[in-house]
Image (tube, rainbow over all chains, first blue to last red; front, top):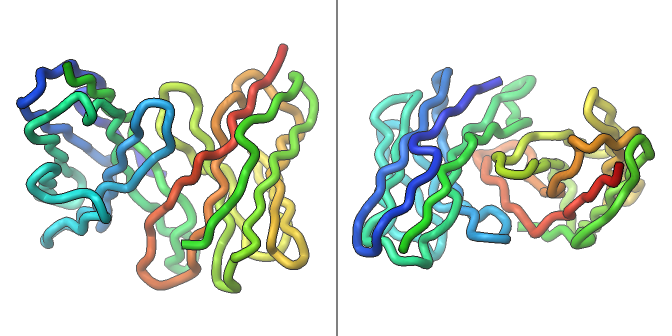
Length: 118
Length: 112
């Protein structure tokens, strides 16, 4: 299993500012995923962060708005830039756990960062 | 990604069994069926997964139809702690596609 912590757990920010969210995992993992969950909605994948390479963004998400760093195998940051009220969401990081014979059976999720933009 | 269809909400009484259905008529032969749940104010957590045969673990059972176009997550005795949104997700076997694509899920309410 993997234990994931995120900082901050919640924040209230003013529009136009930026917030950097940290994700720390208690074991080394190749991939980390960043998700967004808007109020009352399901989770949407923002990007996949691999150590040593550029993050891969999903359709509708761009690096200028959501820059990601992945300095080592246990840590990643997601920055929400130039925030607007539409960015008010829960942001979650996630890592996969290899199952038997190298298959991916589970993903573990952090507790999330609840962001409110005023 | 292959699509899943779940009821928006279901209700159960404490200590009774719960059967949560999921339709996935476009499932491919290499897709695993995964179930996750999200308790209030928490990140999702893995529940169970299967390919063709029914599966049991300490949390739940997964019954998969013979044609694999539907599946049912079974909670044998619901507790108040099982109140959550349950997501049925298809994930390709093998390769490098480790992404999870979440649908709307089923909101399970458990009555005391």
